[in-house]
Length: 93
Image (cartoon, rainbow, N blue to C red; front, side, top):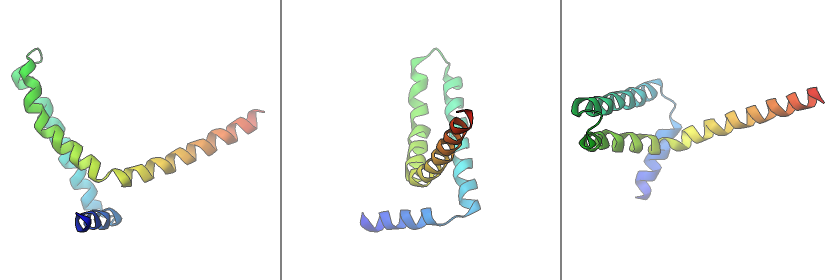
């Protein structure tokens, strides 16, 4: 378990454009498959939800695996926005 976490951390530290393109394309294709499952069975049918759960599990796994990297980006964005709005409040005073 510990070695797997270390491998995930090593994978997160690598900034590779092809990794990002691969992750985004996999998620996009899984979303398209999910929408296709819903429309193939019919929107009103309650059984359309069950085939859509399979791609949803993979999407959740991919997002959860790369969430710390996204979290760092959100923190940077949050600090930039906070400083921007604090500066804007000081200007209006």
